[in-house]
Length: 418
Image 1: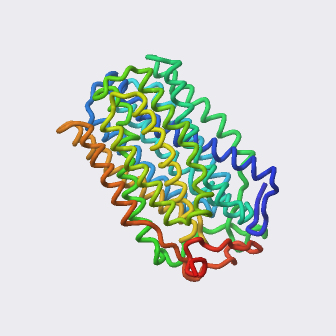
Image 2: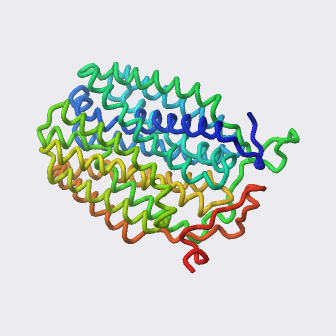
Image 3: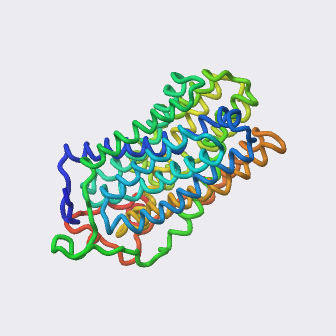
């Protein structure tokens, strides 16, 4: 199914794209990337490394994400949403399988890096496919539901970890099998959506670079994404490790808390609807503040299953919502080139995680993980208050970016506020 820029999908096909997209995000983010944090305690025991090394491995995953999202952002308009989305699923499958069979720390690190790269490949093609093939009125909801697949993947990873107990390799084999199945589904559910002025006449598509490269709102988008990444790195990398090492929780209790993180994270899908009710700026400030408060709560009460479970659940919902808002924010700043907007926002989000993970691990080794979590919470609170969005349309962008589609007014635009 090759989509031109003037076609939109029917309701049934949109549902197929939404479910397949959410499943791909679940495989890449929830299984291939963020499950690393779930297994940090067993990896530290199996391969004999400390918190700083665990943070460095996580940083390598985030760095691979940064490189991959740049490539995916540039290649998606040329090769289309389907081809790049399938590449994301294949990368997740290879990375999780490498982790499953890792005989030493080097192979483990390579697997973690490849698995992390899959997330960078996944986001731009899905955002591009939605922006080019879904009716404008439904795009915010579809985008945020797909983005909430992260919570679904984390929620699935927890029970698999419980069922496999000490057989962690079996868990990662299961992750690889699920990733392969989702990749096959993606082949049939994601439209091709190639961008080219010559689309349909047999001419090859071109790599499209947005003009201007950095619109007026993009610096605020970059700072907000960077701080969100830094603030979230503590929980994603050391969340379960803190519950086990500082809180003394059992494997079962700490894994249940992780499951709550993913299960309640799915609630973050309502972020798109909250934007319609409250506006992008207010919704951002609320969600990132909740993320910061939940992070510090985990540091304060790692011994309480109830408190930690509620805090991690709130973190999951806030993170999924905030990353979904970042996605919407990017597509508004770069409304003529949605893949570029999503690519920039998620690239800098991962850059913040890349920089923060080893730094937080170093803090953990020096004065304890609780202080690392407190530092991350402070960064998040600052990001919520200082970098809230003030979206204006990209210069020169218009509804002509997608012929035949009418644009919904930006809730934060001057016309809307007036």
